Length: 248
Image (cartoon, helix red, strand yellow):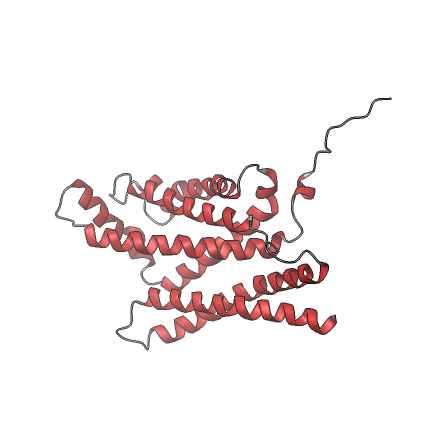
């Protein structure tokens, strides 16, 4: 009787790791922040370079800053920031639950491949819905809406996949106690991040109209929401590890 030497093929459920939920939240938060920072930098550059009376490329950059979409969202900055953060976390959950176990290769590449799906949705559905036309054709910025959107989503996917593939337990002593504490801290952080974001958004919205000369409403709300997420990350981690010590 012959015996097969081939390794058993793992199902997708088996390939998905047990800590996919907290890891998805944390990596999604990191990826969303990275994408937001890149967007802020790109917006600043476009505003500095753009000139409605200049050459073709310069007019494209000007149109990126002043168009139907930016005008439509100028009055709902807080809502736009909140939806962006929540969408980044939601996509990360989809990635960790369904997509990551089904793909092969390094984490950053899997994340980039996944990010192509929301990019396509953005240029064929979101931009027309917001008044920018299919592929941003009504913005008047040539190919920049497509290219810029692609770059932002690739940044999101690269950070998402790269952070997700990093095991929290890396570098820890290989013993059950350390690993259990790491898992509890990770789960606590995953709970603390979205709570911190929500609290930060509410606080930012409340104080943004009372603070003059510090920055725009968008910058204040975004900054406070990031700070809130950071406090939530720290508090959740400590609470998670604390619960382990009390039940040990």
